[in-house]
Length: 289
Image (cartoon, rainbow, N blue to C red; front, top):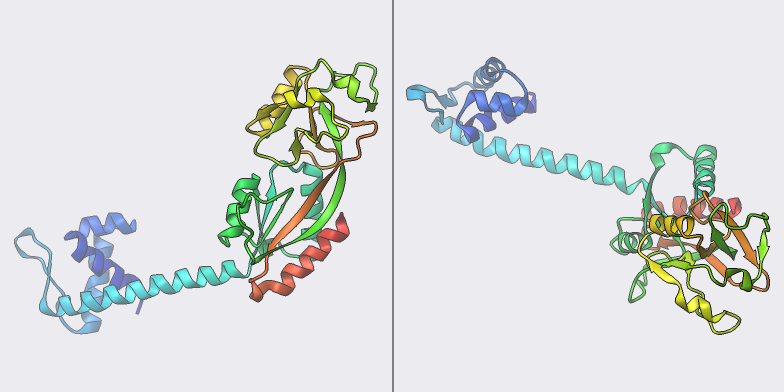
């Protein structure tokens, strides 16, 4: 017997109305009446009193209502557990939103070459959100420049994907001569920016070889604002020279500056049911980079 007959019956009793039960289930009042009549025939007894404008269950109806409500809760729980099981088979990957489109293109290439779309769920997140989701087991993998956690979760492992030279991100028209490599003196007199929320961007406050003017860099809350400040104010920002998210400006190298940005893949080590899948995917990503 269709479970919908029990759903309609429970809704009629709960709402005390055939009309309201119909609206809740997007069917007509007539359809509700017909389904409950069929339920009464199959059970062999009257379930609802309809006199005096009131809808109340009969003694048999109260028994059926109690068991039908239990059955519906079990059905709902079963469907929820089925969805959770399906989700547990999906590799949940979070990628730092400070990473550019070329990286996403490589990830899509891996997906197209080796896997099916339904095997993965990609999320674009900032590193604070990605760190939290990984820690709470809402992600299996987080790809970014660091984790925003006070204490290290022993269930989280990491592998180094690549190390890219730190570059200087500027507006399109900052160097009219089109010079690609610059020296620190070229930055003097221009406002510097860094993101407080994305470790792909840095202030470069290391005293070894870093000029004093770098200490005056303004900290920006998000990458969009950082990019806008750089473009509008003829400013600059130090960032990953290969995978920085914004492509509207230009990336330059500073002579003598060899500091590197480390892009890492962080992963949950306690997801045994998809461990082979996870390991295989990590190998594919390492090969691509």
